[in-house]
Length: 94
Image (cartoon, rainbow, N blue to C red):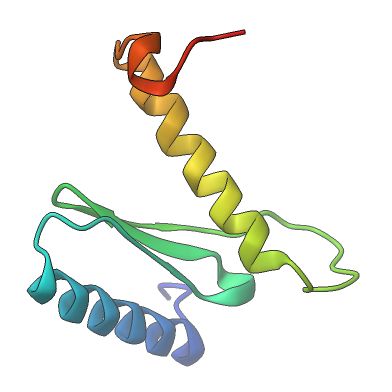
């Protein structure tokens, strides 16, 4: 048993189709496709992976997409800093 449900397989197929369509427009694009309680799929620089959602007690999904985008943007910013880009690239560090 793989643990992959029909719903998750359908979510993966949808994510695959979104990524393929967007990469036709710009092959260098980074793409994040959310799949609700299953987490999200991300593609960047030839790497494609599933990131599962953290277990949590959901009270409301209002703002969930905004929170995901904030986390993705912060992560890309932090990784760029860790790879040695200077403060001049992002602005002066307070």
